[in-house]
Image (cartoon, rainbow, N blue to C red; front, side):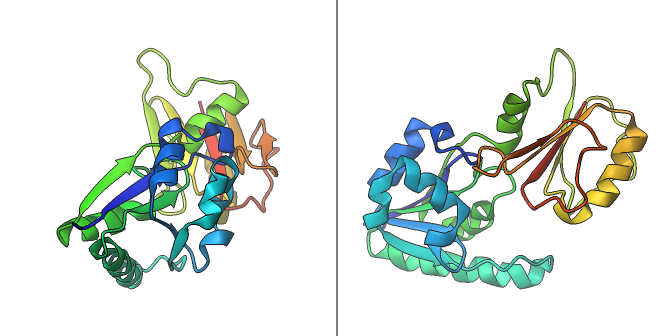
Length: 225
């Protein structure tokens, strides 16, 4: 019988924010996969290992994913990754694809899962705490109340010139466009906070647009209310 592919969310960075189910599922997996050339150097593995030290003894499957914007080019790697996973599933092994945050939110897993499912294998999602929920909790603010809308935007891919819709905004992956993002935020008149590397040892917090540095990293998450 073929194995099953599971996308397992390991949360935003703090291993204590991993769910009990994520910990159990990782323990039960035959193989741990992660996007990267070396699973042990990935952020997801580093987080999960603190909560599941037994993972160090498991078979690892690196899924190389170059960080590029060319959709057709990256699709080739999605296919290669899916085929590598399918080989293990065909051996009857269950594969846990660990991913930051939640596997349903801007995750490499979702692309690979579709291909693997189309190949005839069983797949599943194991939810995790998202970075924006963790960041809001870290800053001690609610993301949305009463009838407020919540807009989640991957700023690196899609950024409007004005944040003019009603409600609150989460801007993810803002790093490479941080200067443009800051200008838009200044014009918006919204209250802005940013958390960089939320839940990780090098976490940094900023409480206004003016405090946000121009060299923010990939894991910079902005909340504008």
